[in-house]
Length: 198
Image 1 (cartoon, rainbow, N blue to C red):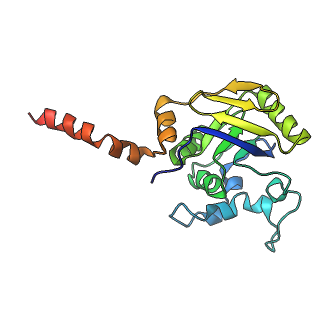
Image 2: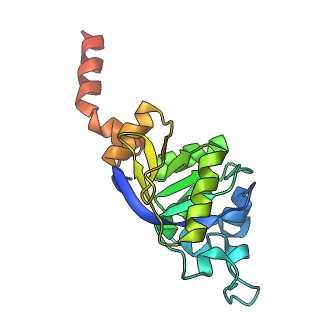
Image 3: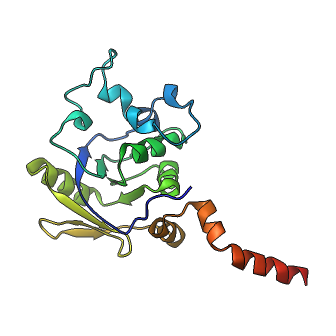
């Protein structure tokens, strides 16, 4: 399944300055029964967003109209816990295209890269600057430049580089998942296989 191509994303951001956010908090286990990658955004951070009666909790950031955007800025150690890929699906389905944190759990990071969400790991110092900038002005915009592998606070011009594997970077720029990538080089694979048969 192809995903949105990712090149340069300029957006405001939603700040979630909570450390050690695990995958059960991102998408509780009771919502994992579906097998299609749609509808999970409705239950992103379900237990933090809603009361038992289904009413929204006004003090949770996703319910605060002050904050919006396609970038989620999380606290340190974002995505820890179980390996459920549904957590990445929920982030994508809600509308986020990038998550910024000073540290990601490896499995969550890879699950994001597989479905079109860019995990941008920054230093703790730069993460703190981002949180403070958004607190001072919720309309603060970030620019995430995937080709250049930089994230910039547009108001001040402060930026930092981030790492990503060349393979995953190319896939995200083209909107490919792993299967799309293989289909894209199908002719090369067939040519190589034919040479082995000679």
